[in-house]
Length: 416
Image: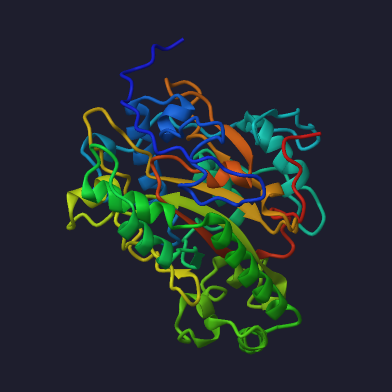
C-alpha cells in the first residue's frame, strides 16, 4: 500500500434540509438531508492535495486532446506550475470479453459504485449497441474512459463534450430578495455572502427540466428531416407551437447550429448529413463560476454572482468563457477539482429523482497513490447535490446517431 500524501484542508458549504417532493438546487441539495454538510470533492472521494493537482492537470490535458483536428498544446497559463505537467500515471483499462456479464454494483444512499473494469462489462451489454448489435469497447474508447468523470461522458457521446448548448435556471427575484433581506454569516466576507446567495438562486431541477423540454422539441424536429433546412424549419414550427423564446434566437446561435457542429453528424457511419439519423441527448457539467483571471481574486475564491447566468427567456447559458478553471483556495492547503461531468443520455423516466446519472471519481491510475477509477450511477438528487468545488450546474444537449445505444431510454442503477 502506498502512503497517502499531505491531506487537504477541507471546506464545507451550509447545510439545508431537503424536503420530500422538492427538487433542490446545488446549494439547497448540499446536505444529505440529516444536517450533515456537503464538503469538497476531495474530501468525499478521499483525495489528497497532490491528487487534486494531478486530476486538474489531466482534465486540462483532455480539453486539448479532445478538440478535433487540434494538436496538443501548452496548457492554460491559469494552471499553477506543479499542475501544468500532464500526469504520467494514467492507464488505459484492459479489454473485457464481450460475453462477460457485469457484477452487481455497491449501492448506498442513492448511488451505486463499481470499478471501471466492471463498468466496461456493463457498457458492452447495455450501452454499446450499434444497429442492435453489442460491441466490444475499443482501445480508443477505453483510453477516453480512463480520463474519469469526463471520460464517461466522452465515451458515450462520441466527440469530447464541448458544452455549447447548455441550460440552467436562475431565480433573479430570489437572488435580489435574499441579498436585501438576509445578512452575511459571522466571519463571512461580502464577496463570500454574495457568492453563496447566487449559488442558492440556481435551481438544477428546473435547469434539467428545461434541457429535457428542448431536447424533446429537437427530437420531434429531427423526425423525417433528411436535410438540415427541413430540420430547422421543423424546429421553428415546434417552437412556434410552444411559444418558446428560443424561436427568436439568431440563426447563428448555438441553438440552431448545434446539430451542424456535431462531428458524428458529418460522418458516413454517423448521420451522414441526415438529421433523421440523429437524436438529441443530455449530459451535465458542474463547475466554478469565478474563472476570470483578470477579475477580483475574491470572486475566484467565493464565486462570481454575475457569471454563467442563463438567459431569463431561453434558459441558455453562454459557456464561451468556461475554461474549466478550478476554484481558487481561500486558505492554505485548500484544493478544488475543476469540474464534474454526468451522463444522462435519453432516459424517458418522467420523475427527475428516478433518473440515473453516470460519472467517475477520477482518472484511472491503478498503480499510483490515486488508485483505480470507480464509476458511479447516482440518482438525480445525489448528482445535483454537487460539492463545495462547484457553484454552477449546466445541463447540456448534444447529438448522437440513433443507431448508437449509449443513451438508452431506461437505465437500471447498478446491475440487478
